[in-house]
Length: 220
Image (cartoon, rainbow, N blue to C red; front, side):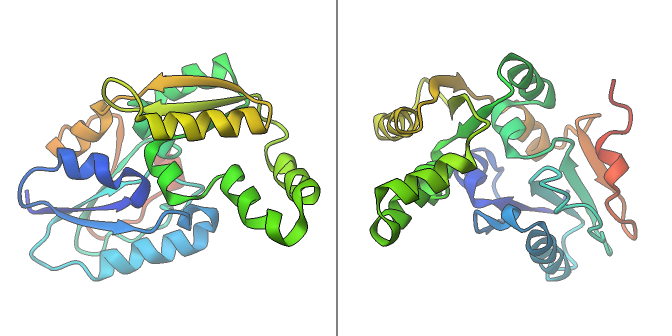
């Protein structure tokens, strides 16, 4: 397989650690998912810029607010995890995410990548406080997460780094959220990178487009 992977920066470190030698890896900036149209255009541009020597493009993305829906495969095979977003990729499966959602629907998730990207309510509060003052900045960001009751820090390996734990605890306390640490899993990422593409993946053949329905086909 002559492959490359296009991934969000939030998963970049995990993918680099697992990627086989010779795999071309393109990392896109974190935050594109906020505007799905921009994410779609950035991904399509990367597809179109891919060398004809490549035959398969892997994605370190899920559906991501439909940002991957409608992508044109051109002359390549596209392989996309059949998940809503990278939360399920960090947890190891769609089922693992659904279990967490059923347990505590109002959960705001953080990971090492998200914290280091600086794209979360506490970071936004810090950006706004000098301009608006504490009360207004806090009120605005509290509104963003008003439906959340838990902050969960997903970690890989034996446990989170202390600096990430400290940051996540601070954010949970600041916004009065319950705090929990969840062990992640690289099972889905390994399957993606090793070519073990079963029902957990959307496979789009050359000349086809990514269909919205494909993310739900054959799911119980």
